[in-house]
Length: 83
Image (spheres, rainbow, N blue to C red):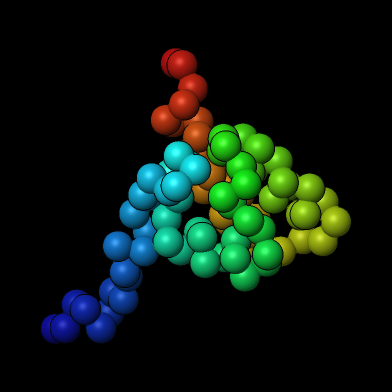
């Protein structure tokens, strides 16, 4: 059984990497943000980026952006919230 054909996941694209503005984003998230002309580099914190995405979603729902927003919110909660 060829598991590479069954599970075609590029883990490198899903790994969070520190970007020039200090945000931790995956290549996959950046591709989606770029697709919808969201310049992630102009944000200095994840909360402001999430806010921008949510503003766009309030105007017009988009499944890809909603997914990115959810991922960022979850990542932000688990990594930046004092528990």
